[in-house]
Image: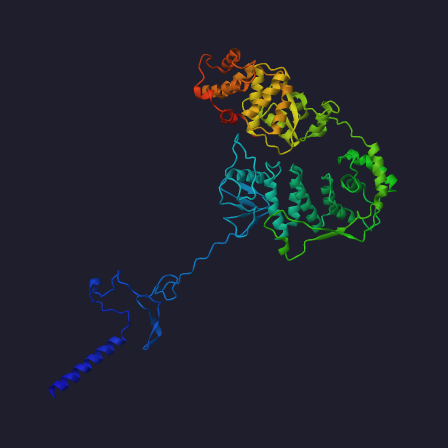
Length: 620
C-alpha cells in the first residue's frame, strides 16, 4: 500500500514538471545553464556517407503555425527553406542603356569634356548594340604632338584602338569643324544620327543641321553620298523651310531629284514664277537638266547676276510650274548595320511630286540657260584686302599669280602671302602664330605650303620662297613624308643638286627607307622647284640639326644620308661627301662607322630616323 502511494506521488510530480516545461518558450534557457561540450554530442562523421534530401517541414500539432526543418537539409541562399531570417534578393544583372547627348549636352571622360557631341554614350557595354556608342569605360589615348597617327579605320567605337578613340573624341570635341582624319569617323558618327532619327524618331531638325554642316569637310565620295542621301530623305521627312532648303541645295554641285522636288513644290500651282535663285540652282545642280559637256558653274553672286536678266527675259518674268500628278517615292537605307528597317513599325518611305517626268515644261528655262552659258565668263579674281577679312581669297590669289592654263604648283614668297593675310611683313622673320595661321588657312582652302612651315625651331623670313601644292581637305601629312621631305632638302643642299637627273633618283631612293604613298611622292617631286638649287645653304641645315640633336643622333642622320647617296656612282664612297657632312654636323671625320651600321637594313634605318626626327614636326 505504501509503495502504491509513493508511485502515485511520483507520477503526479513528474506530470506537473513536464506540464510546466511545456509552457516555457522554445528558445528560453535557464540563466545558469552550463555550456554544452560539442565533443559530448553524437554528430555524424564528415567522412561518413550521408543521404541529404530537400528540407521538409514537420508540423508540430501543438503549434500548427510553426515549422522546424531537417538538420541535414541544404540551407543555401537559393533554398526556400533556409533557416536564415534575412530576406536576400537575387542580384539583378546591370543594364547599360544607350544615352543621348545632343546639342546642349556633353560627355564627360577622365581627360576631356566633349561638348555638343550629338551622339550616344554608355557607362559600359550598352545593352542595345550600337556601333557609334561612346563607352566611357574603354581606354583612350589622345594624340600627342609629333606622334604617328593611324592611317586605318574601325567599324565601331568599341573596335577602335585607344589612339583612334582619342582622335575621334578630339574631333567631336572640336565641334566637327575640321576635316576628319579617316572616313570611319564621320561614318560611325552617322550611325548614331541614323538611330536617333529612324528608331528614336527624335531630334530630326538637329540631325539634319549637323549633317548639313559636316558635308563640306568630307573628301570621300562614298561617305559624302551616304550623307547627302540621308540629308535628302530627312529634309523631305521634315519638309525643310524654303530658305533652308535653298541654302542646302546651293551648297551642292549635284542635288538629288527628291530634294529639288520639295524645293519646287512650294511654287507649283501658286501662279508665282520661280525666283531667279531657285531657277539658277535648279539648272546648275539637276543632272537631268545638265548636259555632260556643260561646264560646271559655281554658285557665285556674279553668275547669278548674269543669269537673272536673261532668265526673266526669256521666261517672260519667270517660269510658272503646275504640280504634276505623279509622285516620286523616296526611301532611305541606313548605313548603320544594327538597324533593320523591316522591323520598324512605320513606313519611312516619303513622297514628293515628280517634276522631272516631263522635261518639256522646263524648255524655256533650258533656252535661258544656254544663252547664259555663252554670255557668262569666269571673271579674273581681284585681290582686295579690305574685302577679304579673316578668310583670305587663296583661290583668287593663286589664279592671279599662276600662269593662265597652268596646273603646276605656284611658286611665290611668304611676303606676298603675308600681305594677303594682312600681316606686318616689315619685320625680318615670321613668328610662330603667323606661320600656323598661314598653314591652317591654306589647308582649309585645299593647299599645302612647301617648305613645311611647321618645323619647330626653324626660322623663316618674309623673303623665303614657298610653293603652293594642291592638298585635298583633311589629308593627313604623315611623319614618314615630313621626315623624308626634310632629308631630301638636306641632301640637295649637301651635294648641291641642280639637275633633275640627280634629283629624281634621290627622291625615288627615299622610298627604300620610308613608307611613302603615291601622293607623298608627288609632293616630293614638286619640291624640286625649291630644292634645285635650294635657297638654304648646307650651313643652315647644319646649324639647325646641331641645335636639335645629340652627337649620336647626328651620326645616325649622317649614316642615312650616306646610304641614300651610295647607289649613285658620283657620290658612292666619295670622301668629299663624308667630309662635308662631318664638317656641318660637327662630327669627327676620321671616326670609323660601327659594323652594325654597315649591315643595317634600309627600313630599319628609316624607322630609326623617324624616331629621332619626329619630334621636330608639329602636327599642322
